[in-house]
Image (cartoon, rainbow, N blue to C red; front, side, top):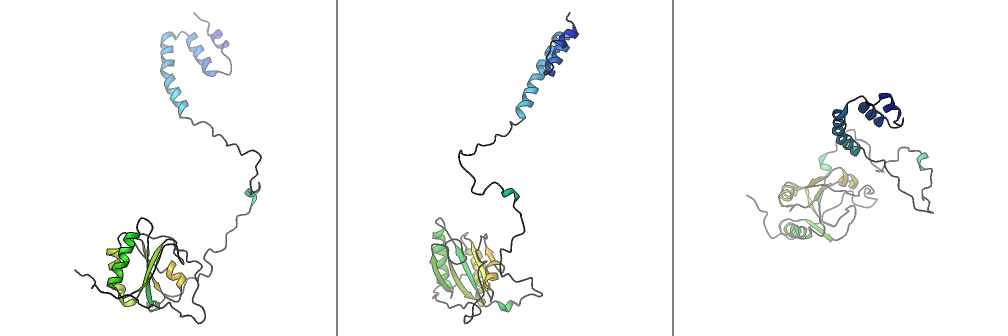
Length: 230
């Protein structure tokens, strides 16, 4: 029979698992102990495989320097100035709805949806007395994608709004009023049909001296088809 003390002494002190196995075998566990060790081996291997390897730091390109320097972590991080310069403070009371003098509808499209937009543009011109703007193939004004617009007077809102809801053809449409605050008209007084998208209106300003206080609508279409009703 093996000497237990000798079994322990021959194991290196930096290998505790090997020490344990030698001790168990030296104590006479024999085949049963060996079987238990063999059964535990897959679990040990699985546990080791689940431990992620240490992250390897990428090597920086040789001979280069960061254009930002090496002290950016020391920079102060103060609160920035408002990204909405000129924004009015919270009003003390609601604005009167009569401040709305007319409406604009902006229909957005891209290379995949322009045919639907062209069809909707034709439908609008055939049915409504509106001011139909240009067919813009590139972003224009605060609008960040191709679009076309039509303007209309307040008396048509109750017809055009539900008509666009039912006939948008899945296009994104911005509907906004026209007041003496065009910036808020495009950012805060909006109604969207389908989904919304960014509008770069933060730099818009109120009309200057000698300009109409509210953008005027001059209809330029000749409707030939009555609006469909149930």
